[in-house]
Length: 433
Figure 1 (cartoon, rainbow, N blue to C red):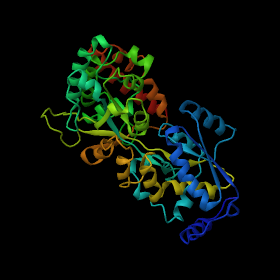
Figure 2 (cartoon, rainbow, N blue to C red):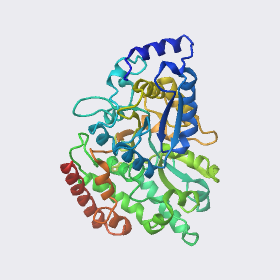
Figure 3 (cartoon, rainbow, N blue to C red):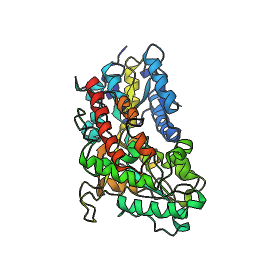
Figure 4 (cartoon, rainbow, N blue to C red):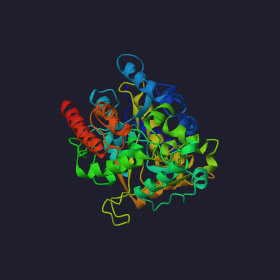
C-alpha cells in the first residue's frame, strides 16, 4: 500500500519534538540498500543508523563490487529481487527511468519541507529528472571533483619541484619528462593514465581546451573539433613520457602509483581513502587539477582550469513494499545536516551546494583541499552522458578509437584521427538511442 504524504509530516513533527518513531509507523521493519564502494560503508551506515534510532526501521547496507552491482540490478529488474534503495549512476539512470524501474519521487518531494531541489548541484538534479515527464527519480547523494596526486618521495629522488596549484598541463609534461628520464633504470615513470581514466583524466583536457565530449543537450559532440584535438594533443605528449599502456593494463594506474612506479596521476575525490590508507600515504599530496593555457599566455584564465564532476543519486525500486519508508530514508541521506555529516566523516562531498567545507579537513594529516578549492578557482562541467552512455564510452577505449593512439603516442596524426573517429562513434550512438 502506498502511504500518503501525511506520514512524512507526522514523522517530521515527531522527530522535531524529540520523539522516537516505532517501526509500526511503517509497513516494514527493514530496508535493504545496495552500494558499490566499501570506503563509504562505515560512514553511510552510521548516518543510516541514526535514522533507524528515530524511525525504528533497520537499514541493511550491502556493498557489491561495481561489475556485479549492475549485473544484480539488471537481473533484479528483469524479474528477480531488487534492493529497496540503491545508488544510481549517470551511465544507466536514463534507461532505468524510462523503463519505469525507479520510484517516482515527485509526490514525496512536494510534501517534504526538508528537500528543496534548487539547493542541489544542477547537473546532478538534471541527471535524475526524466526528460519526457519532468519527474524526479533520485535525490542527489553527492558530487565529486578531480585533482592531481603526486608522490613527494619520487619528486625528491629525481630532483623535481613539487606540483603546485599554479601548474599548467605543460608543467605536468615537463615534470613527467624529467622523472621518466631520471627513473629509467628504476622502472619509474612520471605519469600514468589509460583510456578508462576519462572522468578523472582526459575528459578534463578536452573541456579545458574548449571542446566537449557530449553537448549540454546530449544530442551532439565536438570531440573532433580543433579545440578538443588540442587537448588530446597535450594528452598525447604526456603519454609519450608516461607508463606504457602494456604496463598500465597489467598493473593499473592506482597500483603503479602506490607501488612507487608512477610519480603522478589524476584521481577523483571518491578515491581519497584508497591513498589515505595506503602504506606510504605520508609521501602523497594533492594539487588542484592543472589548467590548460589554451591561449598560451602563461596564465590561468577563465575556463582553462576545469574539473569534471559527477554525482550519484539515491533511488528506490519502482514498487517497494513501503514507498514512504524508502523515500524517508532517501530524504534523510540528502538533508543538509546529513549531507554535512557525510562530508565531515570523509564519505564524500555533498550533493547539496555549499555544504562540503568540512570534507577538506576530514583526512587528518593529508591536505585534500584541492578538491574543494577548484570549485572557486576553476570551472566544473558535468560528466558527459546520453541515454545509453556505455555504448559509446566503452567503444572509445577500443581499437578504432583512442586505443591505438594510446598505445602509440608518438604519432600526432593518429591521435587527431582518433578524435574524428570518436566523434563518429558518439554521434552514431546518439542517433541509435
